[in-house]
Image 1 (tube, helix red, strand yellow):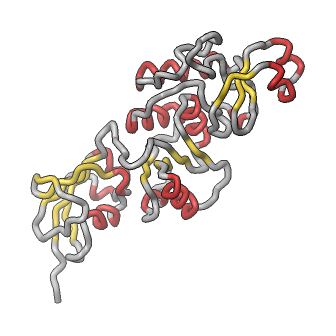
Image 2 (tube, helix red, strand yellow; image 1 turned 135 degrees about the vertical axis):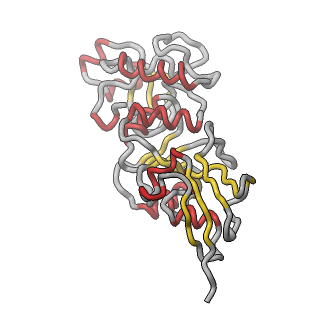
Image 3 (tube, rainbow, N blue to C red; image 1 turned 180 degrees about the horizontal axis):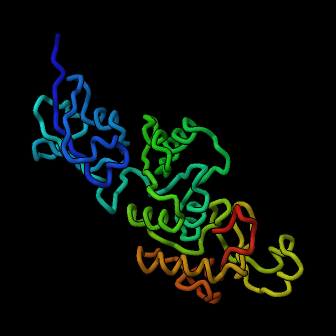
Amino acid sequence: MTTRPEIHLQFAPELRLFVPSERCQGRTAVRTDGSSSLGHVIESLGVPLTEAGRITVDGTPTPRSHVPRAGESIDVYAVERPQHIPGAPLRFLLDVHLGTLARRLRLLGVDAAYFSEDIGDPALATHSAREQRVLLSRDRGLLHRRELWAGAYVYSDQPDIQLRDVLGRFAPVLAPWTRCTACNGDLKEATKAEVSAHLHGGTERSYDVFAQCTVCERPYWRGAHHARLNAIVEEAVRDFGPTSPTSPTSPTSPTSPTSPASPTLPRPAPRSADA
């Protein structure tokens, strides 16, 4: 009978929420089957590979494909930040539980697809692969799916912290006020006449500067949520710039010649479109 090799494995503190409590106290012994890769061993202990960064074996950086041998000492580190995702422009896909985060990313001009209904884990993972989007989720099981193109665990259930987590991890270029918070489409300048069919009487009388989504035709103007949304934007730009050179420097600058969305603030809207 073949003896199962015993290795000694330690996870970085950031990864210990994924593993059983008995493996959170430093280096622990793990018996493997002698044929599985190091990546498979890490996943079998509960850590999604989306969250595993550098791996060392006896102090030497080692690929996930390595088959561990008896007596090896293995360290698994968290993903280094900012994390570069090669192979495609940085775009995101968020699961059904992250609607507020999706709207805040869009407010900042970040491409963030989102399904408001639960389409199921296989469909989400397939969509991630088809469009080469980084899937953001708090569902650990979803991040283990093989068909996933790229993914990341969202560590908090608080939208403010979630946003800072994603911006700090991926450092996307920000382009505030350029994307529809409802459908992720691009915004363009619009005249009052162009959006009048979508306005109520009071809004039409009170505002003169508008933008409109090029996809869903939703109109935008500086409404009741201006101060709150502007605070989100200012904090993100201050802490996680840079911004796109074509993005507005100020949402209150309707005459800016370089930013068609500069006068746009999401309108008072149903909760589904609020940031």
